[in-house]
Each structure stands twice: as C-alpha cells, then as structure tokens.
Amino acid sequence: MTANINSPAGYKFPPAGSSRRQEKAWVKPTLIGIAIGYLALVLFIPTLNVFYQAFRKGFEPFFSNLTSPDFLHAAQLTLVISLIVVPVNTVFGLCAAWVIGRNKFRGRTLLISLLDVPFAISPVVAGLMIVLLYGRLGWFGPWLEAANIKVIFAFPGMVLATAFVTLPFVAREVIPVLEEVGTDQEEAAKTLGANDWQIFWNVTLPSIRWGLLTE
Image (cartoon, rainbow, N blue to C red; front, side, top):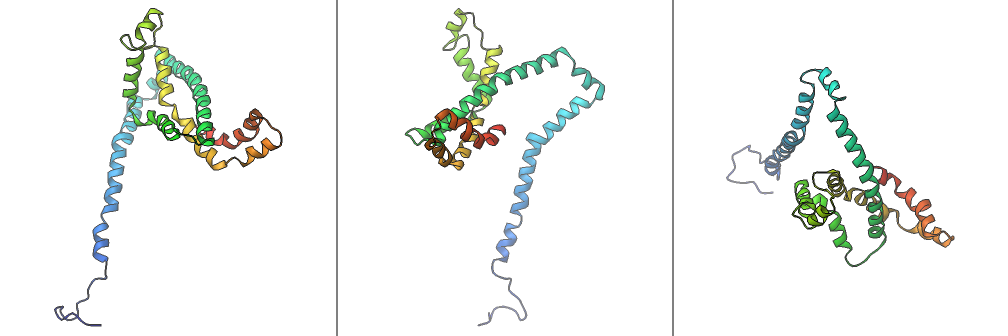
C-alpha cells in the first residue's frame, strides 16, 4: 500500500462512495416533500375545504340540508343512475374480461387499449364527445330531435356519461384474476360433463367473485 505524498500527515480520506451518498441524501426527502405537497394541493386541501364549508355554520344547517328537496333529488338521481350503470357495466366487464383473459387473438392489445380509453381522457373530453354525438347539432342530434328524445342535459346523458367513465373498472379488475386462476378447473369440469353455463356459475364465478365485488 503506497501513501499519497501530497496528503498532509494524519489526514484520513473519506471512504469511497461517501460523497455520492451525501449528494443523494437530499433526493429522497425532496421527492417525498414534492409528493406530499402535490397531494395536499389536489386532495387534502380541497377535502378539508369541503368539510369546512359544510360545518362552518354549525351542525344544524348541515343536517337541515339533508332533508332539503334539492339534496333528496340529487341523492335519488345518483341512486337510480347507479342501479342502471352498475349492472350494465358488470355484464359488459365480465364479457370483456372473459374474452380477453381466456383467448389469444389478433387485436387483443387494441381491445385492451380501447378499454383504457376512459382512463386516458378527461371527463370533460368525454362530455364533449357525448355532446358531439347526441347534441342538437351532433351526429345523432337531428334524428333524436325528430323522435323527441332528449339526451343532452337530461337523464339519458347522465347515464351515458357515468357508464363511459366507469366502463373499464370491472374488466380491468377481473382480467388479472382470470389469468392467475388459469383454466385447469374449468377444463376438469368440462371433462366431467358440465356445460359452459354450469362451468361459469360453479367454477369461474366463484374464482373471480372477490375481484368482482371490489368493483
């Protein structure tokens, strides 16, 4: 081992890599601070503001608004839309998940990408698409107007918008479960004489029920 002739007597060099670790020590706290600041800006502060605006005059105005006609109508409308959209998207999501999870075919990647479209675009863009399709000057607007059917700014438009935004949830949750479960149990049931409907209800559906219920 040779000593460095230019170093003063008794000087100890820092271990290799210590300066690099010191330079990177500030990176993790900085990234955590940026993430917390972003969440505070877009999530925590608006949530706190909602609670503040709701209870700033006390609990009595808050509970009295729960019985107002506007609130009851909004709650009823939300419930009715959910009762329509959830079963429709559940059936569609199960069909799409079955096709994608159990088959390899040309265009499979494109179909998965189409399922992710509601995740990729803004709800504002989705609303604009509905207006361009079903508005008075849209593609189907003249026909709907002639049939005296109102979609935009009406109940059907709300159902369409909600169904579009929530479209991928069931399929995206069930597809990984189907791929993980595999086809062994289904093939065993088929060899025992079960038909497709019996296989779905007795084998496939119990295997994916938790993934389906989480949505």
